[in-house]
Length: 166
Image (cartoon, rainbow, N blue to C red; front, top):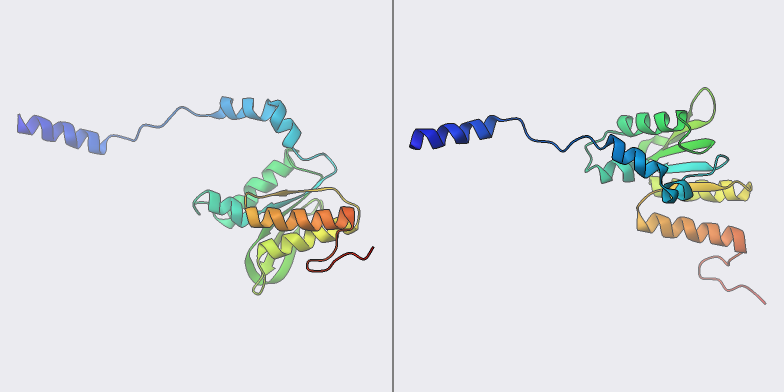
């Protein structure tokens, strides 16, 4: 009897893990939903992706190259805006590598800054040049900083700590 339980236990230990069925059809249905269409960037938008936030959401299983390949593929299939920038931390200096078409770029924040700082600088730059943009992140702090910069640019809000004169 004990041998039977050991055999069953050993078989269960070496059995391949069971996986749920592929979610391909479910993901396709989600991308066809009205909410996805409302959240998708408009065709003329500049899309700035917080690459390290994407990596963190995968519990760091994805490398920067994996995120870059996924973002470049999504851009090539037309799922992202007209121009897409993937922003990553680190690098020797703040630098940007642009694709041959000029519509996709991978940028690095450099040694002294973070990708969040570089994204906020990009938001300021593109808004100053009257471009619409979408920032892809789930980082609450970055979202608040980018929203503040956008509100200041659009409404002429005062600088932090200063009051607007009447």
